[in-house]
Every structure is written in C-alpha cells, then in structure tokens.
Image 1 (cartoon, rainbow, N blue to C red):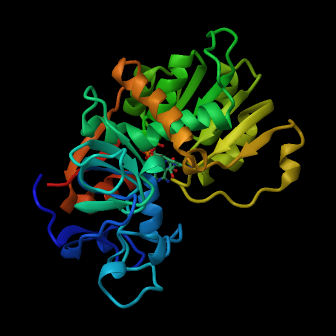
Image 2 (image 1 turned 45 degrees about the horizontal axis):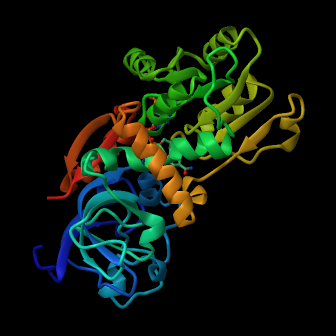
Length: 358
Ligand code: NDP
C-alpha cells in the first residue's frame, strides 16, 4: 500500500453557482484518521443530480464541523461557512488507512458520504456508509449502481410498499418519470424484475427506446405536450390511472401530470427537483381521489448498519446475478467534473455519469 500523502487533489466549490464554480485543486489537506474511522483512496466517484443542488445552493451544504473532508477543517480559519465545499455523495475505492476492525486496509469498498469529489475521503461511520465489495463486483460497476440503485430499492420497498414478487396481471400500475436517467433506469429495471406494470416517461425517441429495453411495458415521450402525455397514460391504464408514481422531475410534472393521472387511492412519490422544486401543495388536492403523497430521501431509509446491509445485499445480488445492470453514460476525468454537470443538467445523458480519480 502506497504511503498516504499530506495533501491531495479534489474539486472545491468556493461559492454557489453554475458549473464554472467547480474548481479542481491540488494541495488540499488529506483528512486525518480518528477512532473507528476509515480513509478511502477513491477510484470512481458517482455524479448525481443532488450534486447540482449543492453546487447551486438549492440545498444547504452541511456545516464544516459535520463535514470531515471540508477544506477549512484542516486548513483555513473559517469554521462557520460551509464554503469552500467539497461535495459528492458516493464513490468506490480502496481503504488506505483504518482504525475499524471490520474494514481492513486494502479492501475495496463502495460508500455514501458528503464529500467524495476528492482523491481521499474520510468515513466517520463506516458501518452505515461503506460496504466491502465482493470479488464479482468492480468498483466501477458498484459506484455506477450504488446510490441510484439504493434509491430505487428503498423507494420501491419502503415508500411504495411493494415487497412481494408480483405477477404482471395483478401488479399495480406504476409510472416512472425520466426513466432513462440514472435513478429512473434503476427503478424500471427493479420494478421489471418484480413484475410490476411499468409506464415509463422519457424525453425523446431514443430515451423511450432505452426505457423499453430496460423493462418498461409502455413508454410515453415526455417531450410531447403535457395534455398528450396525460391522455396516453390514461389510455394505457384503461382510464383507471396509475397506482404508484415515481417522480424525480418535480416541478414540471407533479402539479400537472401526476395529480391528473394518479388512480383513486394511488400514491405519488415525488423525490427530486430536476426541473425545479415542487411548490407547496394545497391538501385539498388529495381529497378527490383519496391519494397519498410522499417526499422521501434515500439516506432516511439507510440510517442503521442493518438497513444498509439489507438493501446493499439485495442490490448486489440483483447486479451479480445479471438481473439488473449499471448503464454507464460516460466516465469523465475528475478534472472535467464541470462538463459532467453541464451534460447532466442539459438532459443529454442516460444512465450513470462517473468521475475517474487518477
Ligand atoms: P437523471 O440521470 O435522472 O437526470 C435527470 C433527468 O431528469 C434528465 O435526464 C431528464 O430526463 C429529466 N428532466 C426533466 N426535466 C428536466 C429539467 N428541466 N432539467 C434537467 N433534467 C430534467 O438524474 P439522477 O438519477 O441523478 O436524479 C434523478 C432525480 O432523482 C433528481 O431529481 C434527483 O434529485 C432525485 N434523487 C433523489 C434522491 C432522494 O433520496 N430523494 C436520491 C437520488 C436521486 P428526460 O429528458 O427523459 O426528461
């Protein structure tokens, strides 16, 4: 194992803004190891839409004291401002230092954290954050599937309450928006394994074809006028409507498409803001069809080592048995992270975007 340097490279956000605020820097301090912690040399970092929310300031960054890779915790004197910030929520790599008996140095892991856009990341709660990879899973595949796969699994199991293997005829009608995207493609594949009736929406012919290949029974092109999208979804369900809607698009779809196409007693699971944050909702809008609305966050379902273990095992099993696949759109060098954000936000991508840490 190579010795651990005192400084590292990484991507720092000095202030909220567009992709141009993402600064690749060298000379950042390598976090120092505390009791029960592990230090990872990252190989791949996942790009997720949430990274853009922390970049723009839509989501408030964690405070420096709770952010173990924050530059100011080891460098500048300002311990109050969350900026400069290292963001990034998932990565895979090799443990280079460990004071945790379950995580030996040299093991390859995939993990969730708050600051993965860096050469090294310190994990303060490895049992709830990191999983040692089986030999059958490469760091690249694990990183490409982890956060979005866990999101899909926990939302299907916990939020939607779909726990049984369903038959195609009796399963609920489900609708997945942005179905060719990273999270959408995981939702479609896992729902397909379970035998749900899946309607996928995606922007354009190519994305719709991909959603179909991933296992959607029906596809609707979301670049059509919304009245047409609504008409097609209703027609597909024989006017019954959709029992469970998974919506990571947010503002553009929630108040219009979702509330219209949801079935009586249906559930709308709105979990993201790709088109902007959903406006506050008048509760009376739930009354005509007795519907439920949820706004879950994946980390809220992975708070204990047991929860992490349960969902990670199921996800790994789906991957190694080939029932689902990680679809990698592109691997960008860490230095080119701004281009990855530009591509993700311009709706040009399908599947997962990764950063390679060289
Ligand atoms: P995606 O790969 O799905 O990329 C976003 C997709 O959203 C685009 O490709 C596009 O697909 C669609 N989209 C619709 N409207 C817009 C718009 N105005 N601008 C940009 N994209 C738009 O990203 P992720 O899989 O990383 O994330 C998807 C959503 O899931 C995000 O909202 C994210 O925040 C959320 N999420 C939430 C989690 C949670 O814990 N709550 C966890 C993980 C993800 P198309 O062209 O087909 O419309």
